[in-house]
Image 1: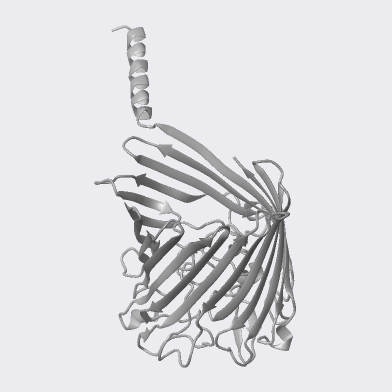
Image 2: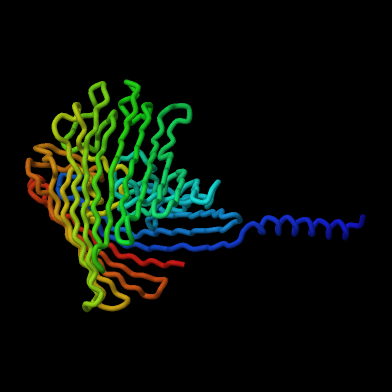
Length: 459
């Protein structure tokens, strides 16, 4: 056989298998966004902090590239890559404080099979975002609480700005219109492969559309930290640390342009780890036993849009309650565990304190003076549910804060201006200030503030 004929047959074979490989792909979409951030943040309120009230100033970038592929037989695949970094950090810096600034993470990597086994069932397997209701329980794996999740991000000094939300999970969705049921199982953190020391999340979330204006969503989520996890004291008594969150969310639009929501939940289970999230607790461990949980949370909201008025204003009123610790933590844990929340009641307060032990009242006003300009003003007032007393605690950023026996924790004002330069380019400028209340010692009542500007390009 001549060399020419062999070459032709080889090329035909390559073309054939290439055509077969691509024949299964019906459609491919590439998208993403690039966000550039410039910030100055003063997130300490006293002179006794580890940062000595030195404000941080930085530039940062968040880059995401996403590929969605539609395959045959109702199968879809999604992959998204993510890079978060401070400008000039990592390999471009003499001090490798923030890791490799060229590191690219797998943010999403999942396959979705619609009508799996039978028509009402869809199955999603892999790294995916999980958002349920108002994200009070499950919404982000990297919430600002010590939740046992992945904490890796290029923005190590400002984790509240990270866009990493995804879980390694299996999600089954049953669509029995008007009833929708989601069942999830997530591997939050894999520790030692040969030990029973993992962190897991399980849940069932159902939504029933009562009519076109009202829906009811009951749910159950369980976070499990297995007994041999090094952060669980139960490794000495052989018990898991568990949180069962049972609740219901009701949403309704009783009138045109008016929407309201109400959510309530209780946390049960057994606490068997160092309770670093518990209000008013300064010890290091429970006393050789697991302790019952009984915590509560409530969120109320109402939003009214006025599209016929000048600048089309929208007004939102909010109230939230997250229970604090009552009595001896070695007898019962009553402080709300934020679990995997993805909410922001005040940009600065969210970056400094856990979503626990608090009453929060807030109002948000948005307006559009021009078609391409949006203005937003936010106001929040905070009270502790249970006072901390005369002690020093650590905030989320590990800065020591001196407390008093008062409840008023302070108030925050945030202002944001957004300019849509084009359909694909958006500029934003946000400024905020947090004024501490008398719940903090006089030495810890200095104003925290921040200014953050950003440019986002979407493609």
